[in-house]
Amino acid sequence: MPILQGKGLTKAFGGVEAVSNLDFSIQERAIVGLIGPNGAGKTTLFNLVAGAFRPQSGRIRFLGEEIQGLKPFEICHRGIGRTFQIVKPFNTLTVLENAVIGARFGKSSKIFDSFDPTPIALDALEFVGLIKEKDLLCDNLNMGEKKRVELARVLATAPKVVLLDEVMAGLNPVETDRVMSLIQKMRDEKEITVFMIEHVMKAVMGISDQVFVMHHGEKIAEGLPEMVVKDQAVIEAYLGERII
Ligand SMILES: Nc1ncnc2c1ncn2[C@@H]1O[C@H](COP(=O)(O)OP(=O)(O)OP(=O)(O)O)[C@@H](O)[C@H]1O
Ligand SMILES: [Mg+2]
Image 1 (cartoon, rainbow, N blue to C red):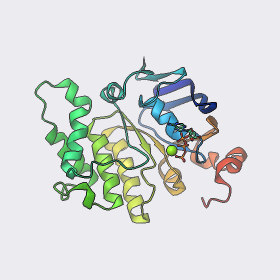
Image 2 (cartoon, protein in one colour):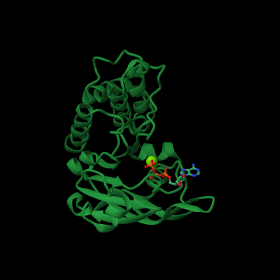
Image 3 (cartoon, rainbow, N blue to C red):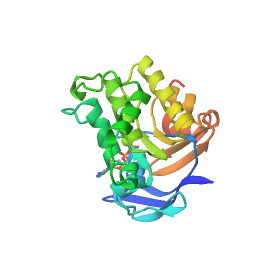
């Protein structure tokens, strides 16, 4: 059964439909890659799912219930976490404090009255390999570490689904491999479903079970990664001369 589904989703800015009558369906515990050229509407789709924007039309179902139009914190409480295309750690806070924020505002905080977010935050830091850095200010971290703080913060919200917006962008090959393994570990050990926007094709090809391709607000292809990269429309719209 799909855990997350969108039907007929549309969101326009001015006259331009950034997301245009789009359908998608994601199976539980899948890793699904979302690719497409700049401006295709990928981040806008995430913003619709995460509640940052309300769709002008269409429905979003998560765990069998409609969630379109809910506020971002309500969607987070239900179990959809996200990271942002432009990394947004709280730079003046420590690594641990950043993870605590995820735990404090996430799903678990709603379940328990007397709720201590620190153990959940520490668990998340352990998971992403940042426990030694827990007392450092985020400002002092390198890009790879900042991205892992983002992953820890989203993990601490106790999500069933995560929306990852270009977590591999700007990382060197070693850091990229590390984040790829982390994403697989999130799925394998924490049973989290992953929907990830990614331009790094090595990562898309390496860990996605399925790939969606967007262009001009529409989904132009979907399927197994090795099939999608051979699709003529995808090559024309996006892959072009990219090295796969
Ligand atoms: N808040 C906004 N206000 C106005 N236009 C927007 C807004 N957000 C996105 N757009 C427009 O919607 C279209 C889709 O943008 P979006 O950021 O979703 O693309 P994307 O696929 O994530 O691209 P990229 O790969 O560059 O991140 C673009 O034309 C963009 O300029
Ligand atoms: Mg984007």
